[in-house]
Length: 207
Image (cartoon, rainbow, N blue to C red; front, side):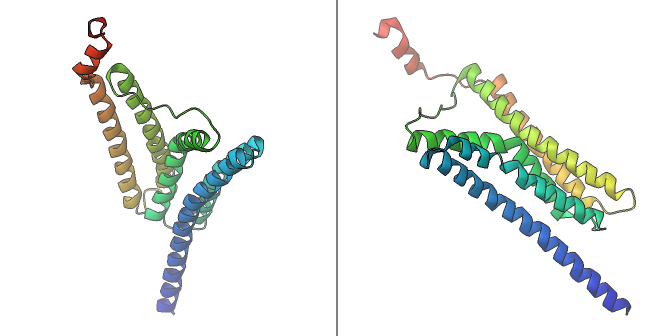
């Protein structure tokens, strides 16, 4: 009876793990499907309001994943890597989802709706440094959101549970923050200078 109970609990744990991982994959696929549908309605069908309404459904995907993860924990599931992955996915969607949609929207608008060409990021000097800091801010916002959700899961487990997998995800998020700050800081301390030949082309003497 003890063995049978252990087998049942193990099978239940594996099913819960499969559900969470499957839902994460489904949310990622749905993100791009909803994005494609919204842009198709906005530019292909010439229905910008309906397209915008569809794009506004994107946060619902993360809300569904968050609710399912919370219910899984509430039902007694031991927080492990799958819950950590869900927290990281939600965090990165919060931090980077809007910029991703904006990036794709600008290119679809230019390609299919005669919109202006997408603005290319600056390459040199202070402008490049500002661009890198804005990019780092988005990545840091994603990582911090994930850290908060992971810490909430740690508190939920308490001091008696195994939170090693959640702590591992937290360390990874700290690495993400550190790397992005390092990259942005390098462009500030060592700005990339414009080639000398371009300076000569712009100078009056060269004309």
